[in-house]
Image 1 (cartoon, rainbow, N blue to C red):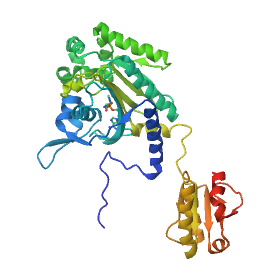
Image 2 (image 1 turned 60 degrees about the vertical axis):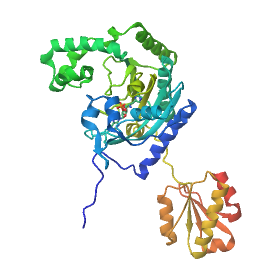
Image 3 (image 1 turned 180 degrees about the vertical axis):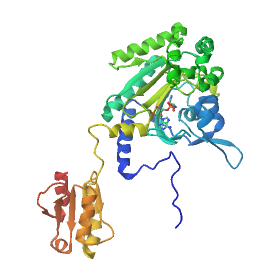
Image 4 (image 1 turned 90 degrees about the vertical axis):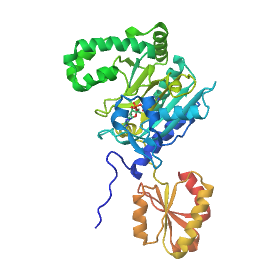
Length: 422
Ligand code: HAM
């Protein structure tokens, strides 16, 4: 027998018994975004490799080690998107969305990173991302956080912690970088191999190291906060004041540096301790330099993305799981005439009851086997149509979720009957 072909490592199927949760999440998130006036943008799954090199940064883990890059038949270097911000910015510049305009956008879709797979970390994963362009004040940063809080409320998720930090402007970071490199160079013996390499290429990322032997060194490192000018400080303070006035709890984490190079000023993450090592469910920040860096007119911007697999995992740990959508009714039809009449009856019911979820049995079979399938479908009611019922113009309605007796209802009155029972 031929060997079965398996899915690619780190890439998963979302099976029908899980997709209900995904729909639940996405529907609530989309509903919240509509309430804040955000519009969807859909961009291609593949982009020119250059786009990610120039935005995410050449010396980041993503670009150095994790991208799915390939040459297409024309010899162009393409990459499956590892994230959504770069594509949004590219699309906005290309289509003139940023000229004297404010854009509030969202997107969802698969992203690809060749990371080591583990719980909560995959090679294909889904993000829902939100980006706002053309607004430079801390008020839009605050709106971003307020939106995320409303997501958690709408989804009934608890126990998420908000961490925020500021990374200053590009100029402030140059000064800070010099100071940080000097400090780390003074303690070079304590750096691990990875950090030694990063010292020249991307020293800020050393602050993000998980190596416990470097914890003390990192804790005592100078912080960027000390190098901020008045405007950056005030931006951060206004954001903090806004969070307080909205009653959003947060902690300032000066070691929060993010793994992508485009950030400026505000960065934030929502983290949980319920998912083990992959505890960040949502992350983002401001990236005021990116539009210009990619060839557009200077445009301030801020955004974030949620990792949907992580949110699904978190949802599954909540004490009260949202109900998975089961059909309301399952139509059992035994015999040739009932089968023909049943399909017409079902279409009539769907016309009259737009909210009804009705599964029609297909493929014939005995009453017993059809009834078993009705039960397994999770439906609340079985509707039973046999030769004898049909000849009398009635149908059996049997509750599948309790022991109440089967009722007989006139076919002509069935829609009304179901309307009152559902
Ligand atoms: P990111 O921090 O790289 O940021 O990813 C955002 C979220 O995507 C993470 O917090 C996590 O929940 C999820 N995620 C990332 N990698 C994986 C993975 N391998 N498996 C499962 N989930 C993952 C960005 O992507 C930025 N584009 C966010 C942003 C938007 N910043 C501004 N605007």
